[in-house]
Image 1 (cartoon, rainbow, N blue to C red):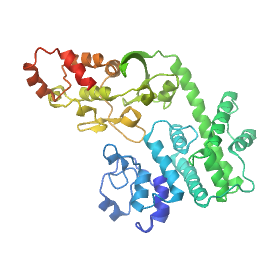
Image 2 (image 1 turned 180 degrees about the horizontal axis):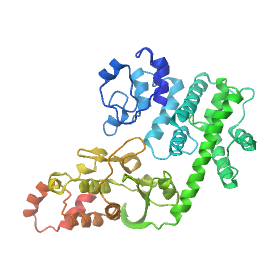
Image 3 (image 1 turned 30 degrees about the vertical axis):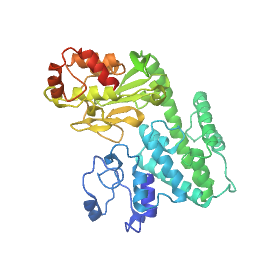
Image 4 (image 1 turned 90 degrees about the horizontal axis):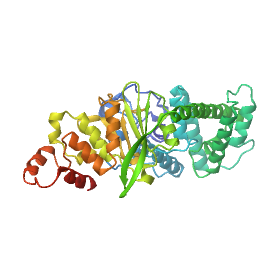
Amino acid sequence: MVGYYVFRNYGEALFPGAAKACVQYAAHEVLGTDAIYDRDAVVPIGRGLGRFDDHELGDGVEECSATLVAKYLGVQDNPELKSLLTETLRFDLKPECPATRLPELIKVGHRNGIDQSLVFSYTYNMIEAIVWAVKYGTGPVKGEISLAKAYEMLVAENNSALSQDGRVRDRMKKLIGQSEAQNDSVTELAFAFKAMFRRGYAQADIMPTIRFWLHTMELDQIAFMETVAEVKTQRPVVIRALIDGKETRLRLMVCEGDNPHFQKAARYLGNDIVLVRQIAGNVQIHTNKAKEIGISLVDAVRMIRMLEIPEVKRKDVDWKVLGCIDEYPGVDRWFYFAKAEALFNGSLTVTKLPSRITTERLVDVLQHAFHPQGVATWCNSYRIRMNKPQAQVAKASQSAKSVPATTAAAVAVMS
């Protein structure tokens, strides 16, 4: 959405007609080249393998479709855009986003089944107001009210559609207070709300927008609380782990179904790893505070990818390379999002064939993947060696028979 805003408002010189460009949504992956797109006057953003598709960047490149658009147009350092682009990139790459930031609110709208054109319309107006307020440094205007005051007014309305549940209202007031305290964030709902006043919108025109977002937040809070209660009834799997040289225990929660709140609720309840298997068979594996705890999925990634590879071809696989971030050639069902320590077999925006690996086998992988001894035991059970491509290991093992396989494997994992 930010990429589209930047393209439409700053792209006319390089792309005549950009100022009037309308939005169309891709139902599936778009395949083509920039030359073809330019010929057809189509500009894929975040899709299409072209100049603005951030999914095709190499390892370690920190860009999103919005920053790609801004840099291509040469406006990435424009003062009115810098904070917006910085926050957009941050929350595109990192897993944790506060509940009252626009990037998270957009996701909330989608997972609650709200029509994407409505989400887009209300978001675009706020983006435009944010840029204006930053560019001109506008101060408070007559009639401007706080986000907290707006919520009180809407709750008092009989037709506001906001919840009368005391738990929900208490939670909303807390979130709104946190949003208003984050005065330095341009993507905070409270900042965007103020920006609309300062852009010149009348209160009567602003209130439907804020009602939409607050109602969306409440729907999400209600669904989240219900999911927390459901997940509480399930028992986690305890995993033996070795982290920073210390023996510890991790908690794995397995959730099956299409509830989009499963992973968030499971992490909220303190589980370290969450495996979600959707009805169609797609799988997402999430971690909780991985960087703080020291959790790495790299061995789990190697093991899962190895299971996807036909047994006759495993001898040619390099164990170390198998843990690469993003996708491994030939095993494109799985995407390793290393920055968030997450592994995706399809996601909200990317369609993938469901994994053929059973849930039981995936749990078995995760039970072994966080301890060198567990990895060695698992690899031995599948006759997998880890230092080199399997064919090379077979040759080397003949001249080093005195080295126990478990010892060699453990050293390889630690290195």
